[in-house]
Length: 251
Image 1 (cartoon, one colour):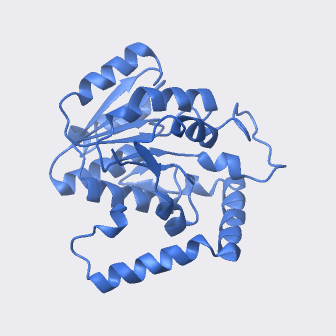
Image 2 (tube, rainbow, N blue to C red):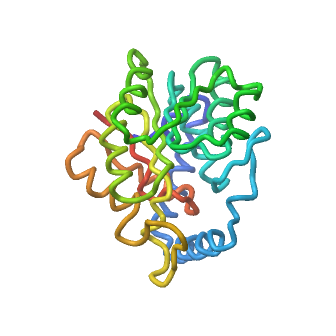
């Protein structure tokens, strides 16, 4: 059962209708192919760089932002760990939902938090729900600091969105995924790199086909049966940067 099926305030008929519709999307080859083609064109045109959340640039597909807020509202985490800060828009998205829930904090980790972004984040009305750690997310010293912050937290959600190479994401999964509480998620962004057209060229990026978050997820899941891919998220969103990247902890 996914979080999609546990919405307490939805009429049973509505839930069943949605479940059937999402299931149909899973086998709708034409719709899925069109969605993948659109995503490739969107990346080429930097479409995801057009948006912001409460005043901070949010470099994310709008569909993924919708999914994140639904997951946060359902899980109601005490702590959200995010690797990759950039301009802080994702931190604001998470913090704003936690603010509405009435509890929880966001911990952002980035190898470099640029001074102007730090100032904007620290002066934002939601700053009281946000903490920053500067350093590589896979540095043992940084991992230890993050794990110390997670100690004693009942419900934890993890979002991985920093360096997108296979080795880096695999190291992040090994470092942080076990902090995720049962029923919550580890969301691995940019798994779609593996699904881009074969002739797509990643300019000035160390990742590409065969070396990306999805290949890391596939390898990591082989030895971690306590997690499963929530395929209903892919089928629901269709256009997402995280296909096979919504990992739900089931045990």
